[in-house]
Length: 257
Image 1: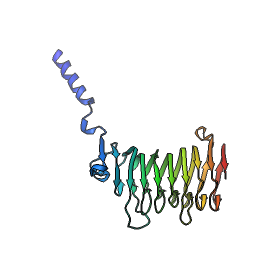
Image 2: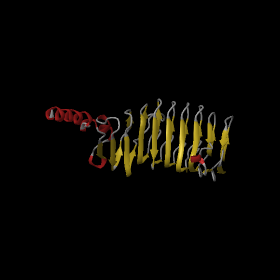
Image 3: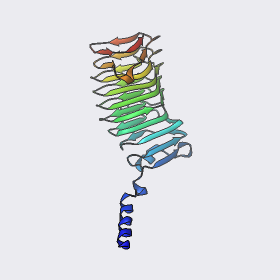
Image 4: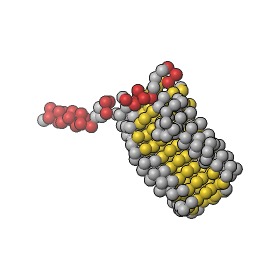
């Protein structure tokens, strides 16, 4: 009888022990040593984290769900000249869901800095997106994005949400000093939605308009987490906020323009 009990205990222990091969893994990438994010992604599984250091000059496409790309607050992902001015982002989330981009500077793209397409779902936290020829962050094709404590600057526009996509803004959001023609801070078109949820948003010092609401919606809803939200759109070249045939829903918020 004791042997039977011991055997049963061994079977149960084997049943509930997680194989190391199935556990989420961390991949370290040092671009200053010639390593690349793209190569790490080829070996990454859903749930894995890619920790990046140094300056990476490459075009990265994430197609795997639940990947975390962690720049650790210091890493830079930069583009190279050339290629089309659209859908040629430095960092593309292509249909993947549950992706997190954290602590990374994305810059110098010949097109978009960060692009979400084909129903992607991703979060951008504590990032800096700057000096891109087209949009800093572009969310389209029914994708959803959550941006938190992130700056989008010196692109055209800083944030572009379009074609049925949505973006939620949280924390401290700076969309400033975007230039070119039209040089707007935020553009919302194609029945897209941008929601300010407990965020302090600064859409100032842009060459054109701070926020353009075209065929889309800019909203601050009455959720408890949204109370205290604010939007500042000042010192822009043309106007603070332009609303064209679209709803502007504001509850429990402060707008300065």
